[in-house]
Image (cartoon, rainbow, N blue to C red; front, top):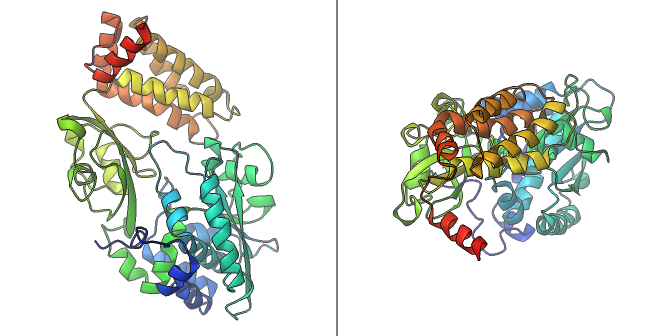
Length: 434
């Protein structure tokens, strides 16, 4: 398919208002403002747009759930926290095409009856914040943001808010807590944000890529959008491919592209680096189960990856070759998760550190066979027992890698060392010895 979301990102000044207007920018907003709000919601519902942040929930349905009868203000919160390891698509859109995001936010606000949108970016995105704020000021001066937008009588403001760099702020209710000036910790649901969200008001929380698709739906129509890709998985999709590949990067395709093509096709990542062989793939950011080489001949869609035994998630495809030690990989991920736990739920707070210490023990060659049963026990006592999905994300690297590579864990314990031939590990040990 021809690129839609990333069509112009390689061109000079693609981030500027002048460039965006030259390419027809904000015309979808003008069209949407001529439609009834419910008609905009219906168009997004008919398109089949599913949230691009991880869960894949239908966007139009989420907007429909917003309590429009409430006398309270309504809000759009754009989730631009993007903290999932292996995911780096949203910051590309914000950095190279911020006005597309602004336009998506404005259309979304019109659809749900909101007058304010917040774009919540992660703490490390200072350079992105500068781009967003500079271009937002231009959009406001041009009459696309603020009062009486494009002479239609529609008022809407957009604010940029940079968090403190917490992974947990990517969870929608934790993001709302952070916006309110509190710690980024999840709320008990229900009530859901659509009923009681930001400052207790009806709120829709949408991912950057999700909102960036909205102007194209309004411009070209829901039928055009739904015909891109397989049924119930329509529209253009951004895939982040990283790890042991020739050309890591962000690639746009429809969701009928196969996972194998994204890894091996020269148009995409171009194959495994240095003549090595594929060992496994994490297809949706670090919090989903690994897939083995025989499992990657599936559509890279929400439903296709589920059928293969994992999840598309945020489409952060992490590729690992045969030099990767899976015990080390799991330990590395658990270091991240135990550090990023918000601490609210005991299974997650205590279990993550416990898992990390057990994995470190095995990786150092000090493990015992009974530690494998203990790892599984601790992970299963985290899974499904926390307020948000962080606990599941934390347990998954352990459960998934033991299921697929138990022999590797046992070899670590039996041999008292890593048995995976890896030049970089040998080099690092030599340097440590000196």
